[in-house]
Image (cartoon, rainbow, N blue to C red; front, top):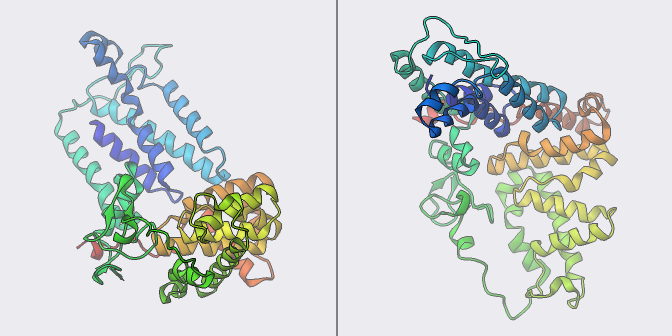
Length: 413
């Protein structure tokens, strides 16, 4: 079978899984094309290719190494996700061997180098057979059609941002561009304001910025702004009607924590090393620097952790590690972790399953089976903790509870 058909089949295996995420899809696609590594023998000439093609790549020992590498790479995943990952990687690798035994025209040496016995299904059709051309067309087309179901395309192999930009061409434009007021569905990754492709600047690694952010920060003012003016500028989106519609309670938490952080920063003497080389005005970037400095000196500083958490949510960076010790100290804090994942998903399309994988893995190393702990919390008397635990269980199992749909066939018309 043709190489692009193998890659398409591997992608389909990875994307169809309930535990599917970008890392799993990459592994399944790579495993599905890995056996063709022995085709590199053509670089040594025709005789070498005839001797080694379908040998050191197309054999069971290479498959065992591939699955073992996947088991190591996914070792920090919950047990269910780990088992699903190594099974799907094994299936992807096996799919290449089985299809080549019927659709390549070459026998396979599955036990090479221990035994050069040949294996194939008769008749073994040549690569140029019509069925191979048809399969290549189908397996290269179906992954794109599945975008209506899964909300991802093979473009994410190159860049998740590129994939997001491509899919937004077909999604409903439910926002207004901050530059021209026209309908759009992209956001600036700097200030999170909506921006259309006409005014967006697509930079390195397909990072989208609005004209204001692309122009760079304004020159420092001679007169020092007050904290309230800075708050009005820095927390504009969180205080906006759109921010309140996302989650009013969570928006208030973010505003409160970031406001306290800004005031705490403003109280730091301007002679402190933190202000060196700056305009001496408190900003959220400096608040994050101060919080990291405080946590380095005093790891138990809860307010510094809340500020880092709130700033990561505001910037859609999905770095929730600052909140992990607070969650482990009081599982009622799970409510805010789930709220952050939902906020970033609804605001920027950030996959909550992927965003929470690292925090879940980290907490599992402390509490053991996180699934067991969450199963107990589902029966917690506190309603918010109970609901948060239920959402976390879904996310832990690879399901996005807020993804009613990503694209529908109607959106693609």
